[in-house]
Structure formats: structure tokens, C-alpha cells
Amino acid sequence: MTEKHSAPAERRSEKKESILFEGDPQADELVFDEKASDTSYNAAERRLLRKLDWRLIPILGLLIMFRGFEKKVITNAKLGGLLEGTNMTEAQYRWTLSIFYFGFIVFKFPCCLIIRLWRPSLYLAILAFTWGSITMAMAAVKSYSGMLGTRFALGFFEAGFYPGVAYYTAIFYTRNEFARRYGFATMISSITGATNGLTTYGISHIPTSDKVDTWQWMFIIVGAPCILVAVVAFLVFPDKPETAKFLTEEERKLEIERMAADQGAANDNSWSWKQVGSAFKDWKTYWYLCEEVTSSVAFSGVSLALPSIIDGIGDWTEDVSLALTTPPSVVTVIFLYILTYFSDKCFARSIPMIVGNLICILGLLLLMFVPKEQVGVRYFAVCISRAASTSLQVIASAWYNNNFSGLTRRAAANGIISTMSSVGSAVGGQIYFDGPDYFWGNCIALIFMVINTMLVIGLRFTLIYINKKRDQMTPEEKEKLIESYGDDREILGDRHPDFRYAV
Image 1 (cartoon, one colour):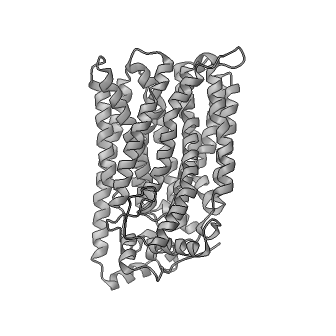
Image 2 (cartoon, one colour):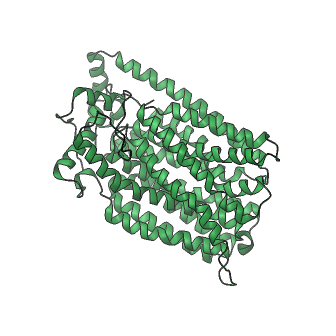
Image 3 (cartoon, helix red, strand yellow):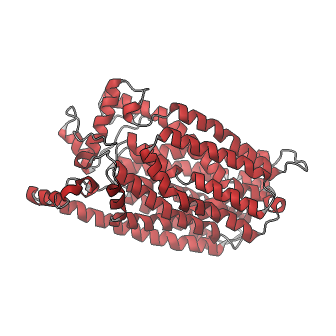
């Protein structure tokens, strides 16, 4: 099961290889932008990227969109009569939000190893098909215990999706292409997701009967399309560059070469349990883990409680509250484009995250202290809090995927970090308990965002220090470090002295 592409392409210049490997600020071409004219890519690479983008990104975006719909449909269903239809209390409802993440914790790490060893196209398609089926089945639930069970199952089968998408994207895109491509998929999700509030508004006006209520229609209509997209994903997704039939032989060769050049001496596509174990022993895993846990509290809290937060801001009906969840998705698209573009353009991860954190903190402070009468300002605060917290998740994923080299180490680290981030998401599902103003919910989210900002700043300066130290190493010192791993050089990965961390 070992396959390596260790030799960088001879056709690439030394300058290009340095840019990709050491992380000097340099942009890749944004193929969706007709005005892009980055000279670092030749015409063949531009054609290759265009093919990859149009083949992968739209379907990934649809999968992310439906995953988001199914995760959040329960919050819309609450306004559609879910509590009355299942005889749940507010406290029980909050537990149905949190138990979703317990399913994540159980299955997320194994999922990350499965996608490393199995076919990504089949893996992602099966997950999506299962979500759709479970979501539709939730329309038949009549009790609190039934809703707990189906929500746990939904979390169980959605557990490996986001780390799976991140891993899959990293197979086809270099480190300074990753954030925008992952951001593109999330933007497609947000653009289409902007219709979620309007769709839910429309569903709320479907005539109901004794057999099917509004909240049940929401589960049925959200779940059904995902099954169709799952089938399409299975048919169009390649498993890796070597088997991408939509590329020509020359394009496949070019893709393999440029991905090898991106990782440089740290490039390794082999598999071993030692590599999995090395991710557990890496200090970066636990720093990124703490970052993800703290940011996930605010992200999940605001996202899950969004309809209820908006409902508590103004004096409007529940169906209008659902429609007003649309503008935050539009603002999210704008934030994603700006922050991910800058992140890849400058090959910078920490600065966009700090900016996003500060904007989210501003939004939470406005929600906490602006008078209730200023509805417009408070609604603006909801929009920027939602947009900033979503953008942070994308850039954070790009950051830790960039800084673990070797497919197996990256997959294992992805699993560890994203598994524990589910703890933050589970906490986030509980913090908005004090409606309709949610002062303490916003306060808790604010505290976690401040902690996250300090962690990001600390990691930024730590990685800058390591990069500078490696710059100053002599050839003899580098060789000594490599030899210190003895027969375990397969676990060297990003610890290689020629590797430079993205900061």
C-alpha cells in the first residue's frame, strides 16, 4: 500500500518550488476570476486547475450545503412546531442539539483513517446518502427519545464529512491553493444556503394536516435532495490524481508532480501505524485542538441558535424570523471570499483568523450591550458574528492541513483535531439557554473567542520562530536531525528541516 512521489518536477523552476515549499507570499491563479493573471502558473497548470475546480468544487459545495441544512434544520423545525409535536421541553431540545456532537466524537477519528485507506468518492457519497435518509426519517419521530436517537445517528454519519472534505481537497490542491478552494465550496454552500431561510419560510406556509405538520415537512424536504447529490458525487469524484479519468495523461502527470513539489522533501504518500501514532505525539496537534475547541463553541452556538437569536431581536412572527436568517448567509459569502482570498494570496493563516476573531468579538459585544430598541444594529451584529465565525472554521482547517505533511500524518491529525473540536460544538449547543436576549450565551461565546485569539497569536509566533531556526541550520545540522529518526524517517513529515510552516 505504499506509493511515493518524492521527486519534484524537473520542468518547474527553482523559484516556483521555493514558493510552494517554503511558503513565500505568492498567489495561485483564481480560475473562477477571469481577471486573474498570476504568472507563477503556466498555461498548462491553469487549464489543469480550471478542470479540477469545475469538477470538484461545485459538488463539494452542494454536499457542504446539504450537510449544513441537515445539521440546522432542527433549529428551523423548532419554530415550525417541533417541541409541541414531540412533547419536548426547552432543556430537552438543547440536548437534542448537543447529542449530535457525541456521535461526532465516537466516529470522527475512525472516519479520517477510513478515507485515507478507502475510496474517497464512495466514502463521501455513502455519508451523504445516509444523512438524507436519516433526516427524512426524523419526520416520523414523535418523542424526545426518538429525536435523541436520530440526532445521535445523524452526528455519527456526518462525523467524518468535514475532515474528509479537507483531506480530499488537500489531495488535489497545493498548500497556497487550499484555503480559497475550501472557501469556494463553503461559499457555494452559503450562497445556496441563503435560500434556506426563504425555503423554510415557504415550507411554513404549506397547508398542514393531522398527519404531516410544518416541522415534518422541513425534515422531508431538506433530506430528499441530499440523496440525489450523493449519487452524483459518487459518479463524478475521482479518488486521487492518478485515477482522475477526466484529466489527460499529461495533466495527471503534471498534477502529481506539482503536489510532490509542494511538499518537497516532506512528501510521503505511504501508510503505516507509526505515522498515525506520530500525530498523537506532535505538540501542534494539541495546540490546534485547543484552537478548534474554543472557536467551535462560538461557531456552533451562533449557528444553531441563529433563528432563535433573530426571533428574540425584534417583534416579528416566527415565519419572518426564518426569512431573516437569509442575510447572514449572504454576509458570510462576502467574508469568506475576502478572508480566504487574502489568506491564500499572502499564504497567511493567522492574520485572517485574528481579523475574523476581532469582528466576531465586536458582533457579540454589540449583541450584549446595544439597547433592545436598536433592532438594526443588533441584527447587523448577528450577521457579522455568524459570518466571521464561519470564515474562521475554513481558514483554521486550511492552517492545520497545511502544517502536517504526509498523507497519513495529515489524515490522523485531522481526525484528532476535528474529533475534539466536537466537544466545543457540543458546548456551543448548550450556551444559548437564556432567551430571548441571550446575554449569557453571547458572553460565553465571547470568552471563548478571546481565548481563541490568544491561542492563534501564540501559535503564529511559535511557528515563525521554528521557521527562522530552520533557516539558520547548516547542512550538517539538518543531516544530523534527519539521522536522529533512524529507521523511522517515515514519521519525519513536516518535522523535516527543509519544511516551512504556514503562519
